[in-house]
Image 1 (cartoon, helix red, strand yellow):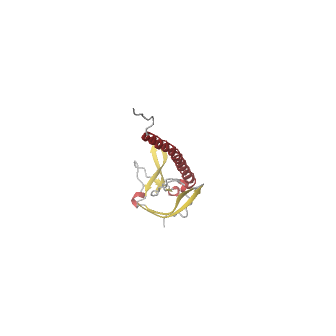
Image 2 (tube, rainbow, N blue to C red; image 1 turned 90 degrees about the vertical axis):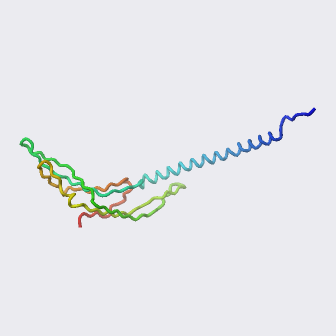
Image 3 (cartoon, one colour; image 1 turned 120 degrees about the horizontal axis):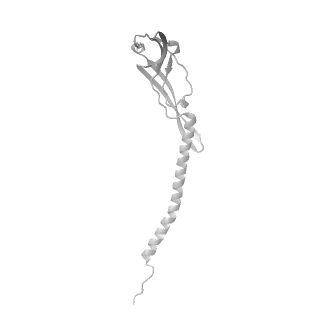
Length: 167
C-alpha cells in the first residue's frame, strides 16, 4: 500500500509564494497612499500660490465706452436719456515679454509667470460716428468716456505703468 502525503510539495511552494506576495503588497499599498497624499499636497500648494499670484490669464482688445446723451420730445416734454455707446477696436496689437519665477510652499516648488504687456489699439473713424435715433441727434460725452480692457483674473495685475490716449 502506498501512503498518500497530506501536503503536496507543489502546493506548499505555491502557498509560500502567495504568502510572500501578500506580505510584499502591504508596503506597496503604503507607498501608493504616500504618493496620493503628496500629490494632493502639491495641488494645495499650487492653489495657495495661485490665490496670491493670480490664475490663468487672458486679455482682450480694448473697448471704448462713450456715454451718449439723447434728448427726445415726448408729449410736450423733453426727456434726456444717457446710454453707453461701445466701440471695439478696429485693430489691436498685444505684445509681451514672459519671465518665469518659482515660489516655494513647504517642500513644493510652484512655477509662476510674469508678463509685461504692451497693448496698442486703433479705432476706425467710422465706428466713432454716433448713430442717430428717430430724428434725435445724440451728443457724445467725451469727457466721461472710459476704456475697458477685458482681463481674465484681476488678481494677476501688479501695476499699470503707462496709459496714453491719442498721440
